[in-house]
Image 1 (cartoon, rainbow, N blue to C red):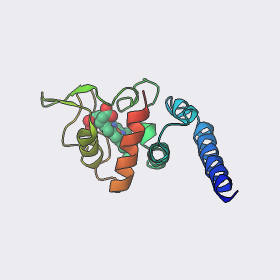
Image 2 (image 1 turned 90 degrees about the horizontal axis):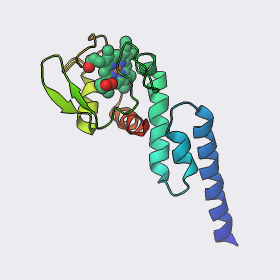
Image 3 (image 1 turned 120 degrees about the vertical axis):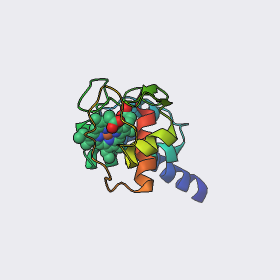
Image 4 (image 1 turned 30 degrees about the horizontal axis):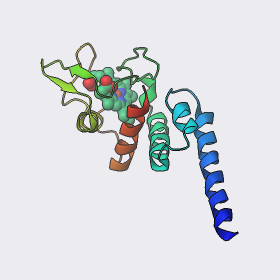
Length: 139
Ligand code: HEC
């Protein structure tokens, strides 16, 4: 009796989290994630935290999730894409590059964009990790 009860509580928690994520709406991917009961819970939580941080810091005022170009490049399909920088070098958008781009935006500037991303935003390492997980989920 006890075990099935706590199992049910855990399930309720999962469902509540899925509902919260779905309610946030918008960005493709999260709905698909929430629909998969087998998706690992920590990732869903991390992606949600990343989305919240991106909203809170105003990242989404410059980075769209739907492919449209604002003053910054869209995050749709960004992860794994090859980028060309104003200094002529290239890099694939992986975890390491994204971390650099968030913490030190002027280190390498993507060709076709002005260096207008605010340097040194007070984003913690934990938030950077979450934002990267969120970017990875925006397909
Ligand atoms: C004022 C507009 C602006 C804001 C606000 C902004 N960015 Fe940017 N961001 C840019 C521009 C422009 C570029 C492209 C030029 C460059 O590489 O610096 C960029 C590039 C990036 C890149 C490189 C990869 C890519 O194609 O997007 C990442 C990652 C990124 N920003 C993350 C963030 C995060 C996270 C935040 C919020 C904490 C944020 N940005 C806030 C304008 C902005």
